[in-house]
Every structure is written in structure tokens, then in C-alpha cells.
Figure 1: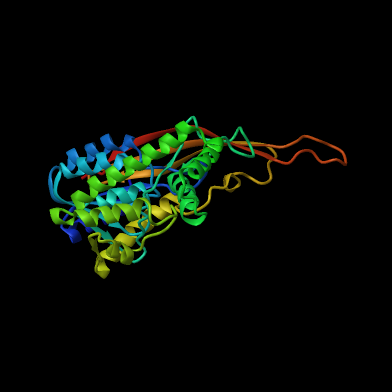
Figure 2: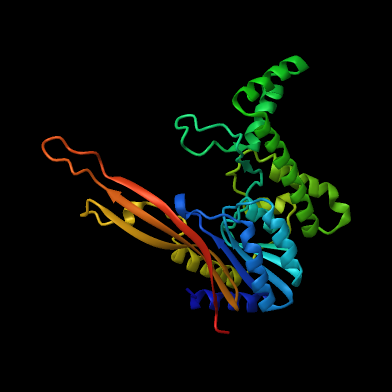
Length: 344
């Protein structure tokens, strides 16, 4: 499980940055191999930090599409307990909850391909609407931006200004969406703004910059209008974030470390169960293991291991009428974090 090349690059990054480096990578693959930032990593980070001890400067190398929105708040505070200065290294994707992690740092080191994103969350509750085409599918997630955009559309574009018509528009929304789900939308929106503002006060320490902090929160939480919008380092600078552009040697080293994870985890590759099956067999059952997350430092490695079972079944029909097509099932056999020491 321990990849010597990655640990070597983590050490080299630390030497170049005069810091202690911890990496946190979550899979961006779809379906059963998707991974999210989640609260279960907090005690794992604590183990790394206890091994590493207090650092003058601590860097978090991050690659993630996001996840739980409260985890960054807890994780940033834990990391800051073990250092005097905290930095986040973004060589490529640091979206949503990973953006929250980044804005809780003293500085964000972004390569040319580095990406942040809006922080407006989607919510899933028991009261979310069912899937319109297949009720057995998971409930439809509700985007905070979609709800707010509906209200703004009614007011700003349709021109509804009197109370009676606005109430009617809201009643139409409630016809399709349970009121408690809409309450969850409002609560999540308020929470994300609160967390973002608190994290930015760690990032921008000048007490006279309160107005700038509110403007950044407005932009990240509301005014980019699309959750998949990507924020380059130039735009992040324009927002007022403390962005560091790495020199070429640091940029190359960050990219080399990302490339190691990309190769190991097949980042960016769509999940297709047929890739793991033999085409000449009508029926087949295989169990596979995938590492869909990593937390690594020069002392420890935690690999998030996902086990799945892929089943292929085919009709035994005979005669001129063909049987049903091949059926594929993917079963989740469990997930666990596996730990190893690096030998140093």
C-alpha cells in the first residue's frame, strides 16, 4: 500500500516549502468509486499530526470534488493546533468543501491548473422530491442556488413585486417541494455562509477587511450562480484571496505528486464495470478493491479501501429468439481505512 514515490515527493515538497506536508486525496470517479470529504478523516489526521509533532509551517496538499460542508471547519482547526502557519497546495481540483478548506488557510498555493469552486451545497433529506422518472432511484438533490434563483426569477425577471403574487409563486414551489425540504435549504444556506465567514477570518486576519470577507462569501455562496463554475487562480486573486503562484520547481513538484495519485487511483476515468469483466464469459462474478482516498505524510499512510462485487448474468435462451441482454450488477462490499507506517 505504501507508495515510496509519493512519500519521497511529499518529503521533497516539505524541503522546498520549508514545511511539513500532508496530502488528502479523494476519488473523483463516478458511481461506487466516488469519494467525499467526510468527518471520518478527522481522527485519521490527528494520528498523522501526533506523529509529526508541531510544525512552524504545515501544508495540506488537496485534491477533491468536495463533500460534507462542516468537515472543513473542524479539520482546519485541528491542523492549526499543530502549526504556526497553515498553507493549502492546490495543483488541480479543490472544489466545494475543498474550497472551504483552502480559504481556512493562511495562504493558498495554486498552480496554473488549480481550481476552486462555489460553495453552495445541495441537500438530501427524507423530504426531497422523488425521482420524476423512477421512484426507486435516490431522491432528487435540492440545490440552494436553484431555489434562490426561482425566487429571484419571480421577482426580478417576471416582475412580481406585490405580496400576493409572490405568495402564489412560493405556493407553486411548495406544491413540488416539501416545506421541510425548503427549510433544510434555508438552514444549509445560512450554515455555509457562517462557516465560510469564520474560515475567511482565519485567512484574512486584518480586522479592517470585514467588508471584503462578506463580499467573498457573497460571491462563493451566491453570486457565481452555478455550482460547477470553476475559479482559476487569477479570479481567486481578484476575489481577494491570498494566492501564491509557485515558482517552476515547486509547480513541477506539485504536479508530479498529483500525477502519482492520478495514476494510482485512475482519477478522471469513468467507472465502467465491463473494464473488469471477461467478454467471452456469459456469467461472471469478480470482487475488486479500489483505493478511493488517501491521507499521507512522511510518517503514515491511510488508504481508503472500497470493495465491490461485479456480477454479470446472461440469458440461457435458445432458438431463433435471443434472450435478454447481459445484466450487470455492482454491489458495495464495504469501505475501510487501512493504515501503514512509512518506515521512517
